[in-house]
Length: 222
Image 1 (cartoon, rainbow, N blue to C red):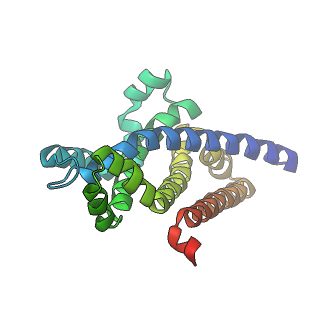
Image 2: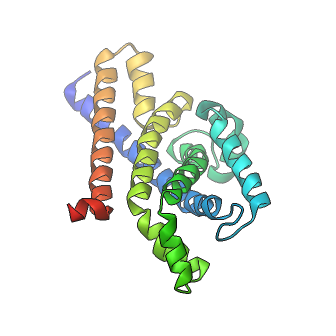
Image 3: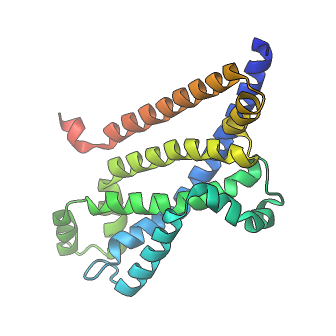
């Protein structure tokens, strides 16, 4: 394969991967983050105490997280067709990627919020803050470094998932690697795909780490 052709294929596949990761990451985070906040604040004796609902939502989240991604992709093909109008291609791949992202973000967000100092919550309560004010001005504000790292980890995982959907015609770098690198026995294409994926993951991780350090008050003090 000529360098120009390889470059064009890589560019197209990279743009498809970025589209899948960005769309699934955004939609999944917008849905998963509120679920994570609910899980972190609805236990017994917490801000929005609803232990029964907390257990039910927790079970659903755990069940979704326990399903292997490649099985999830196949299992929800009818739903994917309903939403995207097709079960193959980049647009279709966004559906299972988003569904896989929601419980992932929810648990990571819950963990980040639970790391906030309980003393800050009690101090806000003593000053008369409402539960909603505590969520937005204390919990989410203090958990920004952890939430940033959680979203970074989500995007990195989505890059891997997006490569996996290439096995079922999802497009992107994974599809390129399978169709050309594996099925057509072109090791140069496979190597190029792996290198691009490594660079992409490193770029996302470095940007996320830098943003988390910027939000971390402790690092600013030092």
